[in-house]
Image (cartoon, rainbow over all chains, first blue to last red; front, side):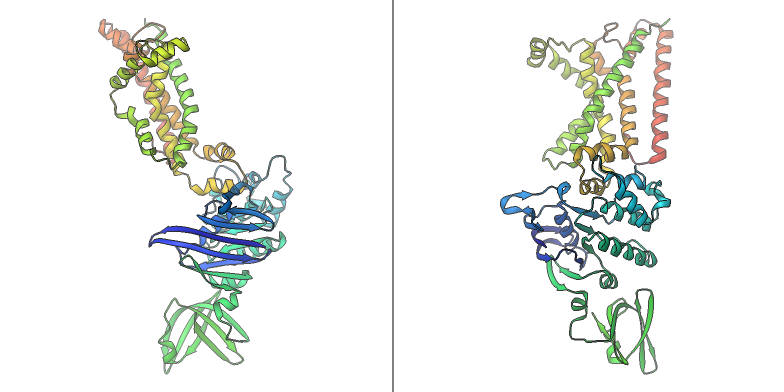
Length: 290
Length: 224
């Protein structure tokens, strides 16, 4: 079990904002953190990693205390069992892919794990390349593999997929899931993409202005529990067109574009770019603003 | 024919100065690039001071400080039997101070330009500050370091004012090439002055050419 309590004043573009959270996570969970930029998502990961110190904080992972500001205790980042994937990958430009992974080994440790990860992440043909020779998706795979070399308990992913196109994104989601399960990690991922959160996470935390606004399963958080549908998916409105008495709403969800009809009074509330939930109860599809 | 001694002395001075500055500059720059020390700006300004201060001003202050008549000079002479006025050792100390910005500025700007995440990534992989510095940070600012080394070496060779004030012109002790040229001109030996000057001119040009060739390849350092 992981317990996190943290208070820290954030200096954002819109002025000062107190980050004040309290969380309990089960071991092995995949947790997504969702929220607007500047809500304090990255700071939570950094506090957990020990890269940023909370003014007031308490972190306990299993039986180990990582932070206890009352006792002025702070476990240095080097001693925490974490893997961190940075938003811009932070691969070491002077080292090849294989050397980047090997750098994470401790002294005299055999490089079995490096070989295993190179195979698992399908990096064989890239292992002697330098980071600048790699595409965004390849860099991401290397960063992910490097974060796992030390077999951490907790994997922290700071918007790992935001710079990638859809196809790459789906592939990498699978890699992340594979690694999460294989190495029995507890994973924290920052994401803006609801579809991704549904696919990957057990638990989602919605952060608004430094506070936890909602937490729970992706279904309960994003859909509300009032619907009992046969199927439901989330997407974004990409066009609204009038056709006779009906409106045709096009919703992009994952790789698909779905057309849904709506009545005029429904359609007037919809805007292009809005995140919506599509659900179908037997015959009758429902479209609802999130 | 010219005396080769000043050439040798100049090279020796430049080499020793560069080595000392390299050893001093790495920890200094590391500290400056990550510290939030309140008087950081003042220290940075102090380091850059030799860039704008007339060399004779720096030389004058050093001469006063090193003089055995005064506290610091007396302390050195009483406790370490070290005299820094009109000696080669004095020239080294003066050169180290005078060339400090030429080593520090490129390395510092190199370190500041590195993404912070590189250092943090290394920490999350369990590596200490020292390992991170030697295995990650320094290898990634190779060109800045190289620029610093070349510029320091070249700048030390070109010193005149400071050397004249602190070292004077003692053959085989403090008479470096730039001083030798001055003396040859004073005694109307234009031909010898010409040879010395030509050597320095060619040397300086090749050094700058090298620096710009290196920088055009990478473009991540400011030279001056």
